[in-house]
Length: 206
Image (cartoon, rainbow, N blue to C red):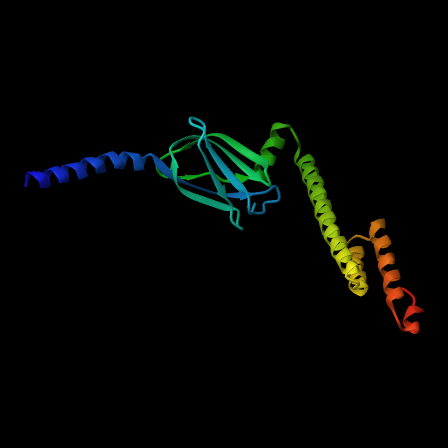
């Protein structure tokens, strides 16, 4: 009987020790949006404990959401990273033994920064339009580079007709790129040289 009481006492004492330890952690969650209000997918939300330096790296899903259990209580520097580049960070976020929510809304942060800089609504609108224009240019260049790479692979394989079709699509995306027209003319020329039908060789380019 004494032995049984000893075992029960040990289990009870262990439980009392573990309970406070479990109480020293909480869950963290949030949603991340870019300056256009769209989800930031595939990003990393880095939670770094400001007391001991420990880190939790949480990845966002396609909706820009992240979540984790068991994050130790304390003050954190929380950084939103995409492609290794910092988009925004928050210092001194306090994690408690409960549910903790921290959202990143870069559009709202940009607006707050603009207010701090004394920008008028019209100036802020112009700034956002300029940033959107720059982002569109980045996306266009990326797409054109992909088309050029695909056309090169097709040409290297001797499939000049497909290369012509791919480069024609690229020219329709942006007709102001001289390189696209040069590559398209070269693909047409290579396609004509490959033709065995004399009539096909004499057809004008369209």
